Amino acid sequence: MTENTRLQTQKDYTVLARKYRPGSFDGLIGQEPIVRTLTNAVEAGRLAQAFILTGVRGVGKTTTARIIARVLNCIGEDGNGGPTATPCGICEHCIAIVQDRHVDVQEMDAASRTGVDDIRELIESVRYRPSMARYKVYIIDEVHMLSKNAFNALLKTLEEPPEHVKFIFATTEIRKIPVTVLSRCQRFDLRRVNEKTLFDHFRSVADSEGVEVSETALDLIARAADGSVRDGLSLLDQAISHSTGLVDDRQISEMLGLADRSQTFLLFETILMGKIGPALKIFEQLYTSGADPSRVIEDLLEITHLLTRIKVTPSLAEDPGIPEIERVKGKTITSKLTMASIARAWQMLLKGLSEVRVAPSPKQAVEMVLVRLAYSSDLPTPAEALKAMQPNSIGPSSQTSMKQSASLSSSQGQEHSHTAIKGVDTHQAPQSNFIAESSYTSSVVVALPKSFSDVAELAGAKGEALLRSEIINNMHLVSFEKGRIEVALGQHAKKESPYKMAKFLSEATPIRWKVSISSQRGDPPLQQQWDRDKELERNSAEGHPLVESVLRTFPGATVESVRTTDDR
Image (cartoon, rainbow, N blue to C red; front, side, top):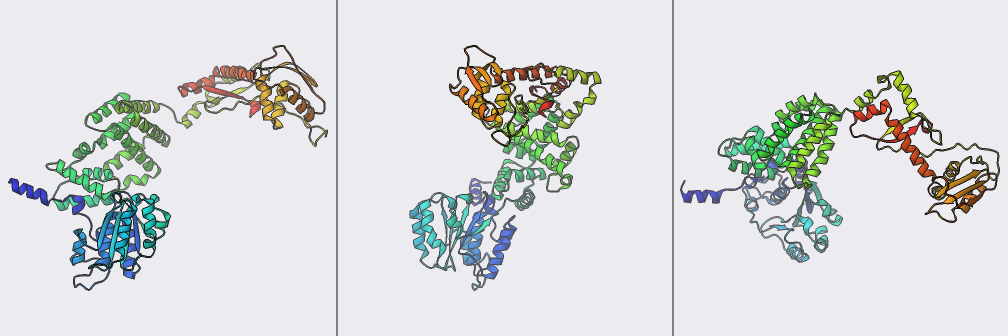
């Protein structure tokens, strides 16, 4: 090829995303509901004065806007046709719109023309009739970028535009559009195009270009496109340029920095088998081949999600929309795993992904995530753990020792304790049952407190939370008798607390109470006594065979609190 020929070829080349841009509704893929609605509207002559098209990038918003412009202004082969859902493509208006040179179809990029002055200029031109077409069409792309004043300036014209004017807005951020604008437009939501539709479209484009692309490579491109036709065509264009012959999945993986899919499945399976060494070796191979560390975790998350779907809905293993290699491997792996282990893997990978993204060394972070995940594979499921902890797995003598070891010599006489696993705080301060007696100052009168602890709990039962807090945290009991209490005040105690306690007891019980302040040291505050008893309970419970079994089953677990049979 001569230099001039090569330069001419480069000059004539059009990227695939533009070359295969649809010129009619028939070529608009994946948007059947919108096509049907617009077609019916044209045939019924019920066209709105303004349209707003929203959706993610590359799904066809601007393309749809241009098709609508052609639909409105096509005059047919004979030059006498009206608006039609199937523009001819050969009349002067169709050709001019396709070539972006139609004087009555104006496109405006709101990202670069955001001000009110730009909108005022547009409004001024609205008054004039079309130069050659049936309608003047204004296409405003990324309309959400307009300023607030620009939107306000547009409102009146948008509500009552001249009959020869149509507005078409396109945006990726529909929530940023003022509701006053939305209410004046007919809204169309362009959805993401599914992978199967993208695969078929890319296959058709590759055949038209005379390029051989493997099905696995097309699967990777369709997945990477994430529902965007334009992004997928750009990737296909890049892949064709990257290859000198057959475009295969290896080249696509190198181009996109993806991990080999089969290797990723092998990595996942190896991790959940608890094989740390082989798993790290597989990851090292993926990293050396160019796979991005965070992308490896994302791929593992995708696999986990796929396995969950197959586990919940086994028929998905036969879904042709899922690549065959993923269906086969997914079915094989799910047969070996429980839903609990898959869900646990999802949680750990999701947390690991956030760690990888902020870690100074993503590679090291991924390795740590894989190690944690591999070690977690040895942990039993909750059902298995419960089964291992069943009382019948421990002999009768062990059960007897459980009762003996759980007996605690606390001042509250708590006994027969059992363990509460970490994370559940079930400890309650010792409580006394107050027996209702005959009426005194109200319909129900409680019995006399028999201990200082009873006084604290009576205050709590009567809604005196502050007084109860003072009693259990800042008062040291010196002596306790019927109708008389002697206390020493702590460093943070309020001076009026003894008076309040005496008044409260005199009103809540049938007798008058006297509370005096002593210079003696007294007993530790009730809260300290309860904390001490709680620690004794915990130490005693940790020596029980059943508790020891739990701690062995769950490495790293600790006894957090103990609850007695009286607390049930």
